[in-house]
Image 1 (tube, rainbow, N blue to C red):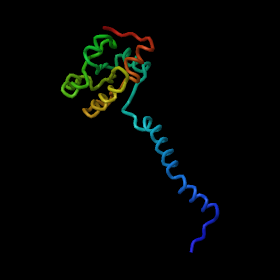
Image 2: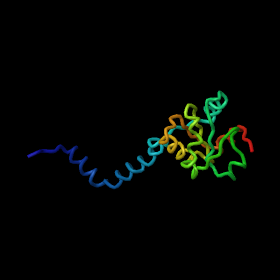
Image 3: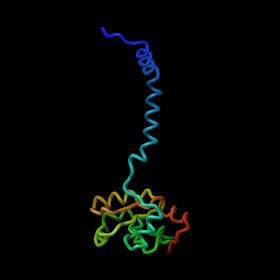
Image 4: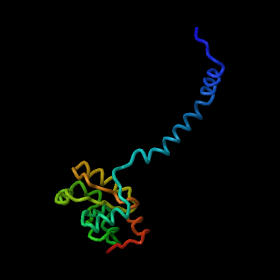
Length: 144
């Protein structure tokens, strides 16, 4: 027969009595960590994007709707809405040697577009962190 110490018995009783609280704490901790653990592809900051664009090493792809694109976009950006990206990916084949900086309004849609581009063989596809909103918040220029 196995004998348990009072400390071990206390620990087992504590775990049994508080199993739901422990599970809630683990789940909420996991939910807090999930965004950083499940990063949706590579991102670049506005500074990194500016450096790549100015050095001529990047092509900017804007995946917003044409109406939003017309309201203001990064200089020399190409507008390919996300819903058309699969059909129009051939237009980007000549840029496989360059970095692609994908922009949208806030950086969420561009992350999905980057995943799609990486599946198509574009190793250097980056989402602009924060999207056009972050770009404009930094006071960086847009064109119409």
